[in-house]
Length: 492
Image (cartoon, rainbow, N blue to C red; front, side):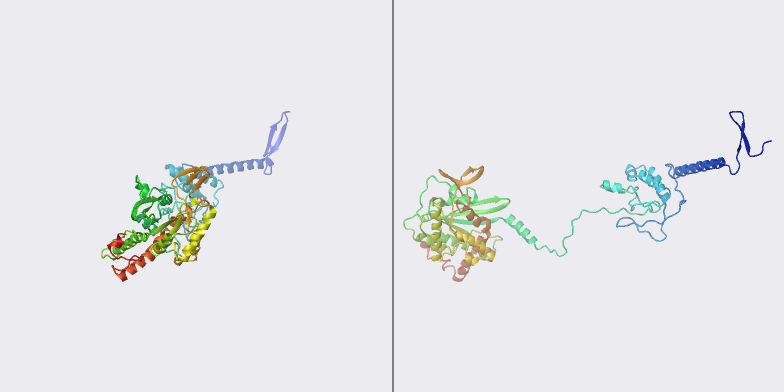
């Protein structure tokens, strides 16, 4: 008989060896350890398959323990937790991941990234740090939602989605303008209102040219506005004859540039200074100027006057001085002395390219001295400077008076550039080149910087003086320096 707990093994040599399997046997301990590892492995596989099975339909109970719900931070990130609110654990996360596998809507399934959820669950039922909640994928998605919003929806509201069905979708931000400054009133918009009104109504500008024949009056007007707008350009005649009396002829053009419309009226005085006896040759010109004032005044005093009175008043008078190189003639002095009281006079030296630079400087000095000695106040007048800034700008123009100008309506190519000029054997005189002549400064004064000021002075100074005299003296009194004696005086 063998003793219990012993086993005999037949060796290769035919002998027998006894193996003891008692309580303290190392072999028994090894077998128990292997069995324990096998049980643990089997339990772990079964737990994973039960928790992460895609066919699971019911949520697991709170077997992993419950944990407090993390508070949401920031606006629009969900509701803040309240005492006694629902609690969640990793099993809730797994349950929602299982539900996402059953989603048939492609857009919702895309927003629920279940793979990422399984990666988070691999650590077991520990508390997960989840991002702030966003709307559940079962909610209706906005068709204008972009890719970033869909990516945020892959996490979902882990705590509130299974138990709360009354959540509302976050409002879509509106593309609204930034609110204006609290203290902004909008007074500066009056400039834009005035601009729109002026663009609709347009502008009016009436310019008169006075001088002997052959001084280039029509050419200079065409050069100023770069158009064929002078009387001779529009109404050419086969023969030019000197009229027996001074005629007043005007022509009107509608000019538009960059949406700005202007009604330009050019008034010519053919026959002035062309006679042997030029006595009182200025009276027809002064009578024409006063007649325009009278016409405007009658429109103003009418009971039913027009909403917008047509402005035919002469705003500016260009007086052409022949380039003699000496000084002003008595006719020039007498004319400008009388007309400077009723209209804005701008004296210019016609055809200044016939003078050398030294002769031009000397001639301008002589003319300036004659104007001062005879009390002739030409535009811009010193007494009408509104402030120091205007005084500085007007002083520069006053230093250039009279303007030595050259007019031309012929275009030439100089160094690849189109210019207006006069071509000679020794070169080309560029009209707009300030080193050749002062035409550019005259254009700036009449059009680009002082046009509105010229019209304002005509209305507030010259016309106002005529209106005051006319209302005080009556219809049979003198009209601003011109004595109305009868039909004989009007026919001159």
